Structure formats: C-alpha cells, structure tokens
Image 1: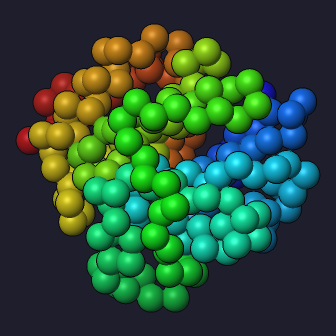
Image 2: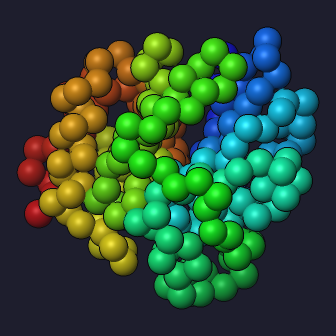
Length: 210
Ligand SMILES: [Zn+2]
Ligand SMILES: [Zn+2]
C-alpha cells in the first residue's frame, strides 16, 4: 500500500494519496489546495474517488478540479453540505485559493466500506468539529485518517459553525477507546501520531473540552 501525505496550501492541510501499486488504483483524501501538484503525484494511478473528511474549505478547495481531471466521484458526508461554500471563509479572502465545492456524487455514511486494490477503507462518522466529519479507517494496515478530529497533542476546533464540544468529546472517546494503541493517526494538519500516544498525552482528554 502507498500512503503518501502531501501537505498543501497555506494551512498545510494533509492531503493523502492512498494507493495500491499492484492494481494501480488510488483514492485522494482532502485535496484542499495545490491541485496540480496532487494530480501529478496521483498521475500514474486510476483514481477511484475523492474523499473529504469534512466540508471546510481548506480540505475541499481543489475537489472540483480533480474530480473533473480524473473523472472520479466525490464523497462527503451530507451533514456537511451546508459548509461547503460557507461565507465564514470569505474572511480568508484570496489567502486560500479554493474553487467552489461541488455536490458530492456519493454521500458518506457510518460503516460504509470502500476498496482501493486490496485495501479496505471503513468510514467512521465522528461529528464534533463539523456535523459531517468522518474518519477513514484502514483496520488491517492500522491507519486512521482523522481529518480535524484529532491532532498530535490537541483536538479540532469546536467553535466554528456546526461545531459541538459534546459530540467532539464522544467521537474522541470512541476513536481512542475502540482503536488499537499502535494505530497510526494521520491528522488533517501537522504531524502524525498514534492512538496510544494521544491516550496518554492529549491534554484535551483530561478535561480540556468544556
Ligand atoms: Zn476543519
Ligand atoms: Zn482543517
């Protein structure tokens, strides 16, 4: 399996290319910016889909371009539909070069499974940062693509439109109690961590969320 983390744009969103080299198939996760660079890296693979963990502009900003280029379906949880082109991001002006985000071709839902080559990706609906926030879990490979649910030593914001601290807490509890300690967590920004490391050291799990 190829798991390539590509930090893109001024907010350094971790776009992820998930691929099976033998079958030549790939999924693109969270193409928030730098669509041309992502397309170049994904170029040799047949892109089966474009998945977004949630609807924030820094994660969906290049979906439109890549969807057209690879003729691949776009996956997003329907609870984040209203966030796609939210005006709050107008404040970023030209800072984030985002294209208007299209309607998803396929709605994500809890428990859904997608296959890329021999790799099985399970969708976990983990609301709190946004209502439709989803994590992508590769159980056999021990990898969780966590979007903005969780960061190394921190958690996603719950104060943006649609954020909910109680739901965030429940989603974090679910991930950190149900998944094995050695699960590699690829976060939506910044460096990777593991479930075990966050169980021990994440300050927000010790009363940091109101
Ligand atoms: Zn976000
Ligand atoms: Zn983000």
